[in-house]
Length: 142
Image (cartoon, rainbow, N blue to C red; front, top):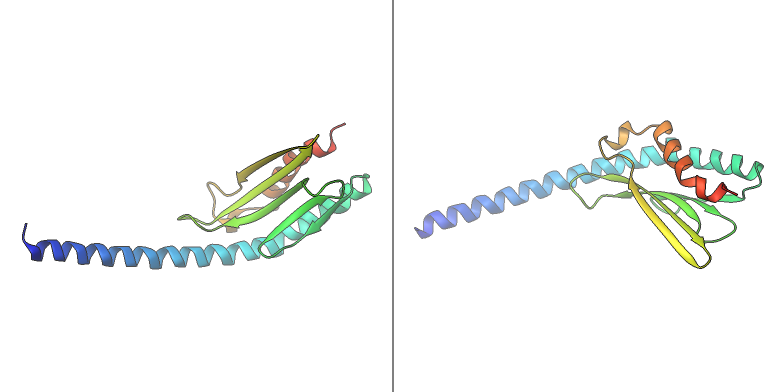
């Protein structure tokens, strides 16, 4: 193969990789903006409402908002929590729901993508509430 052909293909490959990187950064930035809106308008208020209802029902939970996430944590143990955070490492920004539960020294953790088929902007309060209620069941069962 001619050196000029190899060189041309290498240069085309480099240019394609650079364009893809620019597109990926733009998608990540857009996902981060959408996620911040989701946190501010939906997730944090809903987590606070849920904590208030749980506290009224004698299930002491607190809400924490570390940078870029929101966490509902039981006062009974620091390993008992449900949180929502952003995973922007892939080709699509994903809202991740995580839960952790400690029982008899064993910690069980789970993770679920909340917007697997949607964009972040399409996530609703109902979507988030359904996730939270499902994850809360082990904490409130007798």
